[in-house]
Image (cartoon, rainbow, N blue to C red; front, side):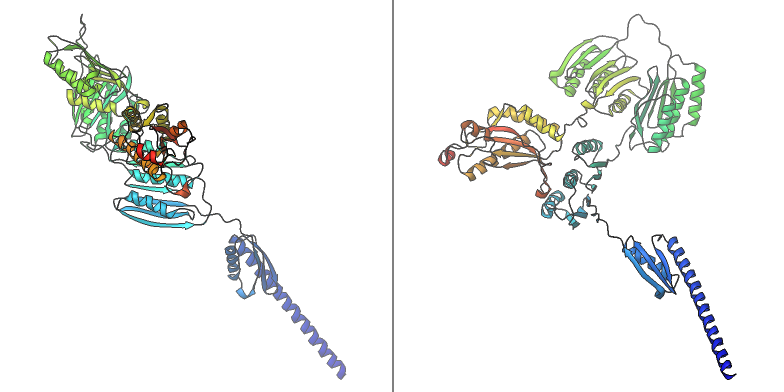
Length: 637
């Protein structure tokens, strides 16, 4: 009995132990499953789907390949936020890092009256000394803040050309901000006036390096227009502006909307300017154009606060009265309206008196027609001579009686209007002045319109038909740098820049060559040009080097005397270097004695590549000889 009782107790304890183990195992499994599910859900919510979560008792095992080390750390941290961090087992690996992308090289350049500052990242291969010299020269005594860092990474193929272009732009714009990357240059600057703005835009656009995009924004102070003028015409030829000055962008939109509703088509230039007589200028002009449209046509002119509306002859009186009445009550208070309904002209057996001035494309001017007296005839001739030059004037006028009052003023106004054109004709009649022709000035129509109003009054009737021709525009038609050098080569083909033997004095025979070169360079704008001098091999090397430098300097001086802007030019003597022919023959020595013109490449020697080096473009420089040995050279050079 005693053994059976003990045996029973043993069995009971065994059963209890087994139950406890089973219960413990069930509890651990439950905790494990819930921990794994919670961690897996949290990792998915945080974007770590690449992890695989396993359970091992109370431990949570993370497996998988993290995209980065930072991603691995974030996954472990996320799991540690769900279960105790000591229970998280890290079996994660990190993917091999992809090829490291080099940083973008970029320079931000700011230039103002205080100096120049540079900040950014440049290639380690950059010649910092050469870059510093160029920037210091541009700063012209002002401070230079160099905050550039370097990176030892491959240099993009267009980087050097972009930087060189940016420095050229920096030299042209004393107040500017320039951002440079290998494939894009962004330039913001301020020009002194609209003419300089157009010149700078044209020069920079044509010098842009290949493969580099250019974003250009050059601003100029608004011109001051006095009187502030707008003139709109609506007749059988259509709707058009002769002058359009605006004070704000909103005013321009308001005016152009009204003009479009009246029938205006095509591109219109309204000059954004200072001098508006009222902040309601745009509203007044728009209302006046609407009224002209309602009348059915004619001309409306606003000069400061005066509004002159002249309807077409034959306009119905009722329509005219209604439109003018509405306009008069709608105009802002400061504006005064004068309206006129011309009568239909009576038939006349004889035509009206007339004066005509014509300007040919070659610059020849012919004046013909009627003059009221000899004094007016002489004044007109002298005025035309002052505008066009004495040799270009042909007089075909005659003095007659009974010309309208103010005829002399109308004639002189017509001649002055003609001077604004490249070619054209002006016809002066008692009731109107007609100006037709071509010009390279985009604002010529507005300028002539203001001239007529100023000389003849606000109610003056004139008809302008002026075409803008880009080829006549002295700025838009500027040749490219390569074209400039090519023109020099073409015009000096077969002609030589010659010097007196053994000296740097340009001979009289070479003066026409210098004249032709100067004429080309004056049209080319701001270029960086090197004038290089070379000699033959005869004579001492040091003496030839000095002579070649003196001759290059002499050519530069001769160009400066002909009013060529040479501030960006340099003269360099190379002596006997780089012969282009055999110095053993007289013909070869003659060929080697020369002057070459070429575009200046970047001063940074490291920035020069085979692709960026321009070919040397040359003209010949000839003397009797540069030397036939040391003694002969000293005697003749």
